[in-house]
Amino acid sequence: MRLSNPAKPLSNPAHRARRQRDLVKFGVALLLVVGASSAMAGTGGTDFDAVWTTISDWMQGTLGRVVAGAMVLVGIVGGVVRQSIMAFATGIGGGVGLYNTPKIIESIMSATLPAANDMVYSAAPLLQIN
Image (cartoon, rainbow, N blue to C red; front, top):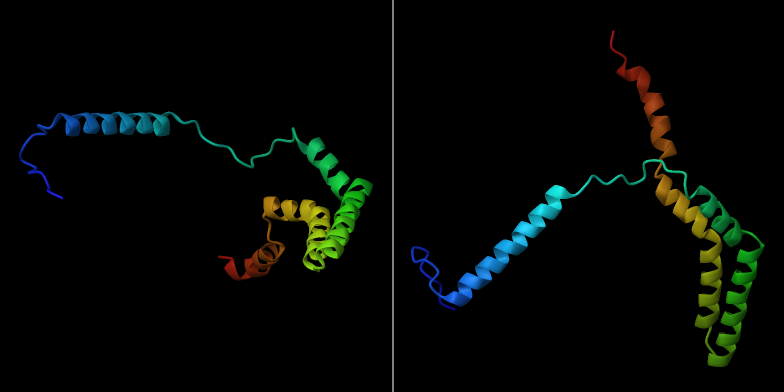
């Protein structure tokens, strides 16, 4: 690969066209970054609380048990047909995963550390300044 002399202007029309395209792409990207509004993730908003409560109740209620039981039953039948325990294990895993999904999502989205809160209150007397 031959490097061009930086002192020479771009005389090749193909290079000039590519450079113009790159500058246009950079300009568009810069406008998108500068013009983007701020993102507000996880700052309140109770609009979908009713939907989340309904879905959680379905997954951990009677409907969730029926679907989990169906997964296990299909896993058992698949295990018998294929003569393998893996289909049964997949059915069990799917059922357990379905039932525990609301708890997992709540623990990830809440992101609270109860132990950290206790540590702050225990260390508070040590940080008092007179």
